[in-house]
Image (tube, rainbow, N blue to C red; front, side, top):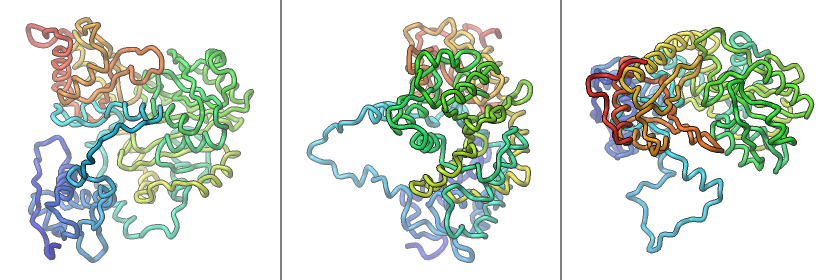
Length: 506
């Protein structure tokens, strides 16, 4: 074990589009996993490390705090920061420590396990023309107020952890969420109606087990996020996909496909992934359906705050008076994926049974950061961040549409959406009919561009296309990334690009 401060094993590149604190965090994590920083090793003081690297001390503090929150470092007030004795990765054996058996057999998986194992990886590919181009679900890391967040996290660490974690989430955070939703989204609720969770899958499984019996049916949108169907299936329900039109899910069509359903999971503000807003007629029909069947609606408002044309649409929860809508929101998409925090707003009649279920089965959501997030909301930082990123994302969406029309119109067609954080690239005239969108996404991945095939979101006959997340891509990097994407698609389709310069704008 090292007894004194170690020399920094990293260097930072100020010219890189990746924020300095992210560079430092990843370099230190790699050094720890490579054993260049052994367990128990003492790190230099943040001021020393900042001086060595030529960066601000706040950059170092933020990187160290994030690694400590993830379990790679240990830090106590008044003592040195050290590499943790037990690392999070210890639960996963490294390839070098695996003893290869004489016989390797293929495990027999359940159908659910087979589907999960076959799902394509969705992660940032090294070599991209821009960070996170065009990964889904990534917010603008370059727009996040890290200095404010670091200050609030420091204050939370000084306060110390709660004596006993509340499985419903921090009371301060639940109160802050209730006040924010009432002001920003028109959702009238109180702190006791709010439950903090680790994500929509955990939320759905909890609700499914409480509200329906195994074998009952639930309505889901087609196309839709595959994790919704997986969560419902894991709870013993039978998800029934209902095709979504420009006005959203149609109750009349749902009644034909699943007449006995008593649960519907919908994204009315901004359908995922097509981007449609549910019409008022379909909203009222869905609410009437829930009332007449004693059913329940789970409203996933994952990015309802990001609407660039007109005012944000009122949630279903704001229209419902019968207490049949469970409202679901997430901080991972609007702030930081690493937060891992979502929330439910329950009808008053479900508060007691959900609280009892959480007390029995949990799990408790991540505790670190809840008090800081409450202060972040109460002090107005969330509202300010949403205002800034609304403008920023509208600009980045426009840049993606413009670049696609200018340099890639032969292989893709990209139309704007009224909201959200992604766009859909449809096949252009030079996209070979034999090239599936899954093969196109794989070709882009090999070229360093992240994209997801639209067909992966269909349970029925697929609709070809590529989902492109733009929120995390700086505007200056969008043009080069689109050009790189167009070149990769042309190679995959076996066609040549425009002979002279860029393709003409549409």
